[in-house]
Picture: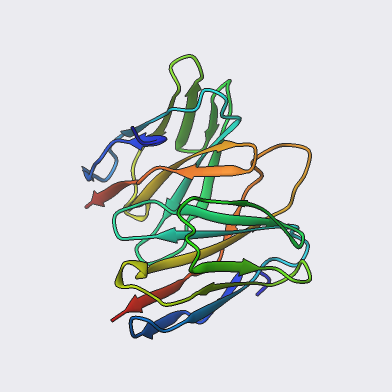
Length: 108
Length: 116
């Protein structure tokens, strides 16, 4: 079993759609959680951290369920510019583990 | 530009040759990480430094791989006797160790290695 598993994708959605990505992790001692965004042939960039209470940043909402070892990312009102690969990242001490990523394509 | 920089951006080499990559982190960052990424996969952790000390190495890092950060600033990653399976994007990231674990890592643009 992989340490961090994500929806395989790809997700192809129309502009304005709401899309949700899921991620599960195997290490129950994991301490912090993130979503990174990676554009084609570019480096990953932090999208948002994920807190136990859930957090929102504009159209993006992240949630964490420690009991189920599950993380989610919800994108509302999708824009063309949201097209990218979304990486789920789980940290234990200084050991960051990335999921394989879920590719999102938003179409006009 | 005060972000993470990597050099070279692309490297093509023949199997069996040695290659060395350089990473310059954000200047005030004390942690530096190396990752490898292949097509369709997320970055895989290779190793990390806190200042000049190499604190962890992944089992992915075979004896042919060595990394250094001699003065706690830039880092080098050397691959000896390259194999075709080493072809990948090698990403460097840096962060600042604060009070909270897992502080944001800032990535460089990567070095794309092709082994012929």
